[in-house]
Image (cartoon, rainbow over all chains, first blue to last red; front, side, top):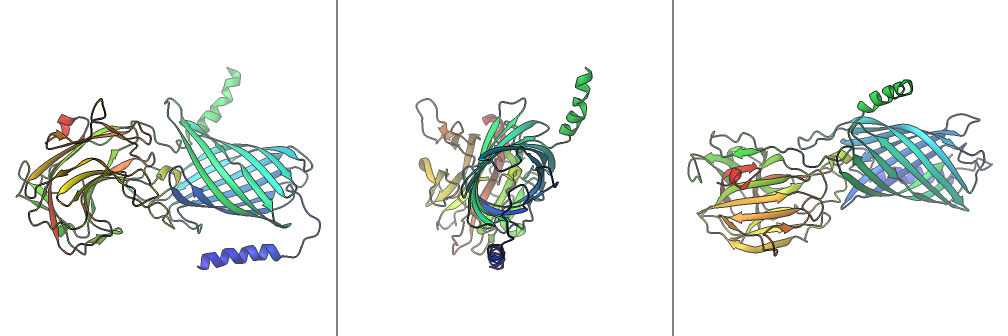
Length: 204
Length: 266
């Protein structure tokens, strides 16, 4: 119950804060995103994300973001598993266009804390490459990042299409679908996984 | 060659990375012999309230050798969200492996037929590689195991479940087999584990095959993994949330896991 109240209060603070004046574009804004899901391949399993992104340099369209994903809860705090994903992205445009691209590089740290004799999961860090297409039309925004993760024995590709609707200058709601393809070199084995998320962006 | 030197740091970094978070197929599994002939319960994992009461090694009755397991479930034996007294073996039902399992069981003559009782099951696991664990909040995935042998009303049934989000969509494979109390019964299972319909099960009871004929053989094709983490094997007594009014006993012996019928059959 306390967790619910904290989330609602946070949303209200962002929604009713006085306007900062001139509307900023995505290259100069800080953004906090909170979302939860998901629908895994064959069963529901709770996952929560908190992501923060900020401009890195004043005159270069470079943004830094960091996402923390917790598994097994809708309340973020977990004793078992987290992913930490810092990412630096360069946007190939100076102004907001109907369609524009970005490319980025980062890390994906899988933190597995579960102590279960049946588990073979291990913590590790992998490099991550991102290519993304961005688009907007009136109050609707579309983002389609493609994340490539490199592993010691294989590779994975994740498509993360997201549609967002701007509710106010500072607040938008979004839906995101994540489709991942994981493959191991030297074997014909591969796996598709999918997740769905609903969340909010706060701009400031 | 000079250009390729620049690849070396990249390859070193990659070699330090983790593995793809999906299991490799057809990994080796642990062959297992649990015949209690050491007089102990070594090798098993316990899901019982009190090992001294729920899981006792006895000298009579036995299926083979000198010892067997007396498995007792009392009305208030509630642990891990269910009424149970179970022993488990891990690392024996991995993704895309073909495994034979065997065990012998005897329903005690004083056993009171109330509610169902899972005498063995192959329970799914969370997808640990992809961050999952047992203690999800809220619990959105709670269902019967993909495969179980259930003793109910004097018969044994092979029950499967293909709906990890549902608790009431299990289905019977073949027909229920009558079981006499006070007599030993030998079960052998031949299973190929997979998360698609190339998976199959094949069961023998007292040497007679009990899975239905499919036109070619007696393999029943049906996916039997909810995810690629595989399953694990449990036997004993499990009644879910359904409490009984009496204490019941089932004897077990000759629990074996291997690669062929002859390796495991008693």
